[in-house]
Length: 266
Length: 266
Image 1 (tube, chains in turn cyan, blue):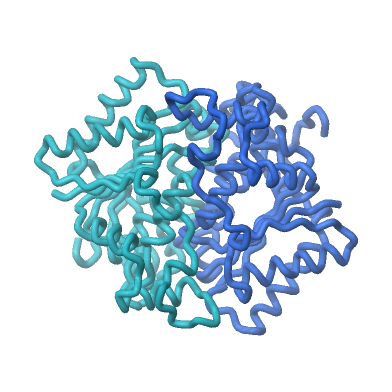
Image 2 (cartoon, one colour):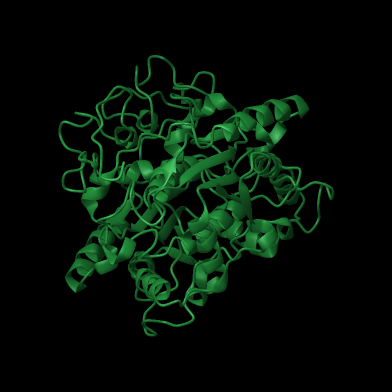
């Protein structure tokens, strides 16, 4: 299989960098092809701006959606964006390694998403607006997994922890960024207390991570509800009989034992 | 009052830019002092990296927490970061204007937070770790408000909408980034369908926004629970009697009619 590792920490001794190193070693050892995007080492341009569109559809007004679609459709993207899209399209699985900064990705990785997730590919797939999203789209058939280094203690991210549950804080990424263009997203791997991890803690985290890597193509993905699987008959809102009476992010995850409709292609 | 406007869109005709212009006009008209951080126009450096720490505490290993704390405490920050902190510390209210990209801020604004929210100021306030956070901290006493341009329709962000409720998608920002260092955060102002807004839609959005600006210092903030107000007796987890049986992001917002403890200083 082909695996893309994207990582966002410049310090080689950081938990993020160490786990990315383990990913490369373990996955290559299993016979996979591993490709890396070490964003800091690449000097990745984080800011999505007019430089991303050397050939403008409209010189008078910069619409990111319009220019992204135009550039993607007409071979007018920058070389760095095209290269990342090539890596993504060749990948069977994508692992994003990053430290949790302000409950989200570092800016350099957000800018990787902002720039690489083009209109026509990751949204407005094939120009069809929102017809294909959440389980379908340009990255369908791929697996995705976040490996996150978290400074604080696990209890702060527990179901009633003060920060909010980690999986809900990361929902804009797992559901909104990865599942949206079709990826199957595995439950997040987190190392807590990463700011003060001692050798023993790092050894435990490494062992746990190796276990997750061993099951990269076997673990069940998060049961996000596909848009076109029947749970959203109008493509906008949950049907009344689905997660009845519930609101909020967790309603978009099917519960164990809940009957799931099978969508075309499953 | 002093108001800081931070905005993140390079196109002057964008909804984001237009609303920021209205903010400036209306607030100045009310006699407030308005300061702007137009991040694209400033060429804001989005990536938080070793260049942020000209005088390192530790040359051998880059720890962002350690170096941020060292630089903040010793006058060793870069001039651009110091200037943004000066603007923030002088402000009575901060308005963040941005387009919603992948259910979060554009990278350039995330990088403004990553770099400006220093250890000792926005977290680890006064070196006291997590003793002062969520309602207390370096930005206590200030109001904050997000003004977000959203490409999609409102129904997709409704309580059972397919994207998840907007206020929960933005929780890492409202709660985790703004309330964490002590700001009182107002309910988010959103313009939906921003990608295809016609003149009438823009006029309606502008009128609604003017109304919100008029009430900037009067509207009630989101009732996020302060860490040290009694709802988190151990500073980590909700007490059993608070939002009993509930989990998830919404449990951290006090419900109308719920008795609130008063914390010192309120």
